[in-house]
Amino acid sequence: MAFKRYTDTGSRSGTPKISIWTRGQIGFNNAAMKEHDVVSRKYAIVFFDKEDNRIGITLTDDNKEVGICKLVHRKGGGISFSATSFLKTYKVDYSKTKQYDFEYDRENKMFIISLDQPTEK
Image 1 (cartoon, rainbow, N blue to C red):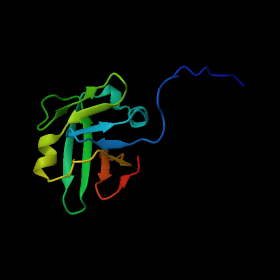
Image 2 (cartoon, rainbow, N blue to C red):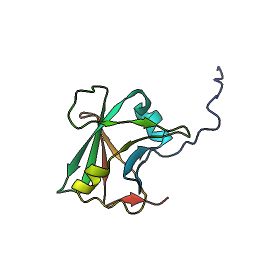
Image 3 (tube, rainbow, N blue to C red):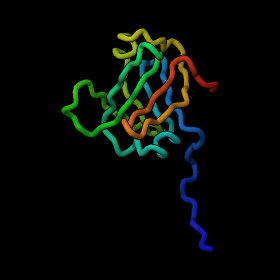
Image 4 (cartoon, rainbow, N blue to C red):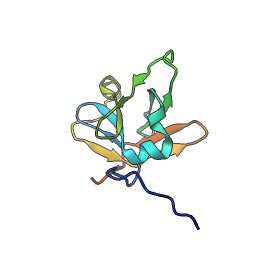
């Protein structure tokens, strides 16, 4: 059996999460980035399901898509995008930073978070 050298030291791993920050940004943690190849994408498109109080996020590289949000790659890890106007439009409370587990809909390539189910930090 051959050994494979581990070289990803210093990176934080764990459960894939999406956060909504008090700055009005939505961010993917390192685990979500790795598991879903977020790092290779340039833009996010956000959707809101009022009936079930959920946010949907798809990723794209097409800068001609309507309503795109530019993904920002943070130095310390993680990727985020500004969503202040989206959060205000749909009256999503972002007065406290909250983390969410998410469902990934493979057919629609969409991250789905239920705003009624934040996780503990």
